[in-house]
Length: 274
Ligand code: HXC
Ligand code: NAP
Image (tube, rainbow, N blue to C red; front, side, top):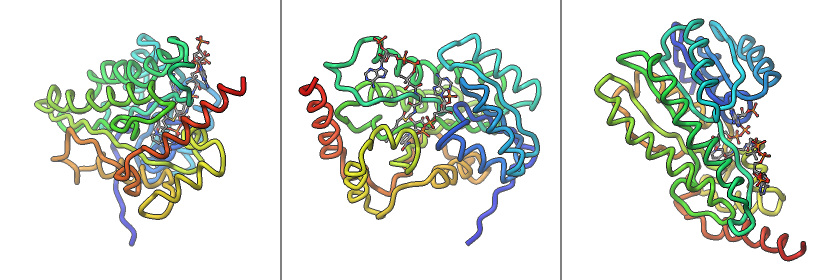
């Protein structure tokens, strides 16, 4: 069954949109005719993505390089996108960093690094984009993670950061709802082949363990997450705000216990062998 969305004349901005899941989201909006802008730290990744977006059918494609930890750079980058493409109809905030590490083995700076990218970076993006959001009608989508609500060994930093992201989503849906701005989070499950999945399933054994626990029987792909973002970005979702929506094949209804335990066991064995 073919389902089409029409994003012609819509401006879509994807922060962290130059690889993995977020790039898949940017490409999906491009294929439906949107004007699409992406941003991340690497100018090379930005350039490569912009070329792909044009090929996919974007009405216009552009990109800019900045680090979401730098509030001034985020503000300047988003102002540049606004100058070029106009008010933002859809804003996706998905820049993130992750590495598995036991809290006892992690420096405070390591913990802070993930908080600064995932959580404070989201605040920078929300605040800098606020003046440029289409009113009424803008749709903000924050890319969260199951760690936001499930404890997971080796992931205290990500758990704390993404829980914060979802609370920002809920709070801004209240603060900005009166202006006609919708705010939701999308929570991908394990999305095969991505950087995040590789870091959390560094061996085929762990990957198979994860796969065996997915009720729908397969790993996710970026298009699965992109499809939800197309819906949330469209007028069909005009009464949907303040939601945290899983796109995970129901895997997290099982809880994280044994998966996190495998990761914890692996990290403890690595620590013991040092
Ligand atoms: C312990 C680590 C570490 C590791 C880095 N650090 N890697 N500590 N174990 N494996 C520590 C460093 O020693 C340093 O602390 C601090 O973290 C900052 O490290 P830097 O390398 O200086 O940081 P930076 O260059 O800013 O890079 C950020 C990064 C990096 C997060 C560490 O991996 C990155 O850029 N990642 C972006 C891509 C990514 O992670 N994608 C996956 C997203 S998936 P000290 O004390 O030494 O100074 C995701 C959720 C997935 O978010 C969920 C799946 C279900
Ligand atoms: P990814 O390919 O590493 O994507 C991360 C993106 O963010 C890249 O474009 C990266 O580009 C950018 N980025 C990272 N740090 C940045 C910073 N400080 N400033 C600006 N941009 C930055 O990872 P992914 O696995 O696809 O994950 C994408 C999103 O999905 C993340 O929010 C992640 O938490 C979430 N998620 C992933 C999974 C999964 O299975 N992969 C599961 C649940 C949730 P640069 O390197 O150029 O900066």
